[in-house]
Image (tube, rainbow, N blue to C red; front, side, top):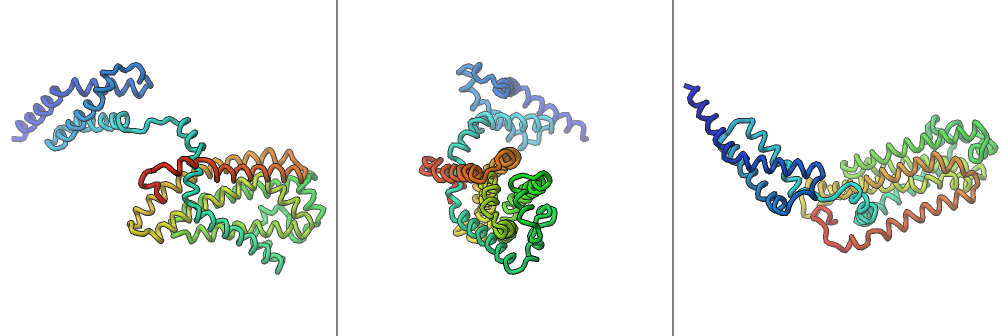
Length: 346
């Protein structure tokens, strides 16, 4: 009894396919040519026919699903309609144009929408640095609690000023020791950046704690070198890559705080809708953070190693910091005045 029903279904599916096969094949041919970058070879007639062919294929898919045609036909139409949608309605922007728009103002514009979170992250990082300094100034043992032994590389309250100086300006194993500290600090900061953003969904509380602890570590190192009258030399040494690296951490923390703050105070929106909106904006910022951390790695690995003069280090670090500030404040001002998508609205 099932055989006639099966034969009827196959016949119906075969008839359905034959009636529309030519249009499907033409659409598939046009899609293949467009996907291979041959858009310029399409005639005006082909370009105008694309939307109609797409709608026909989408209508065929709806009918095929409604009438429960064979799975092969439905799967073919699903793939065809999906490909056609990306060509008809998908974004018309390549990687290089996207990168140009991103660096040309899209990234700074998103950052300025998060100004409050950036101020909070900066304040927490400043407080963490001050706390680390004061704890070590009150008790030397706090240095060992804040700075892991592997990261300090033997630099601690018991180290002589000569050893600390050699680690900044040269001295064989001493230079290598502080290079180990810089490498460990970069790895630590990269991890902190990722976690500060990822944990923002917990209403930003873990993000604040991470920023606080990470800069307490920095405060401990500043205390150590200033106590040996080498503080400004250490600041100059750190500024070469630190202006980029620490700014990236601050922005990553701000991105995490932005998500957490939006979830805690969603306003008239549902929490998940608010989180989605903030997440889109924060994700754009994190792309820039990745770029900054990559640049910091290059500065730490090459420029800082080649320049040993304190004044020159200050000039390099200060110039880089000023460039970042000017870029974030000034770039993309025109974009901020343009109406954006709903999810980009603060």
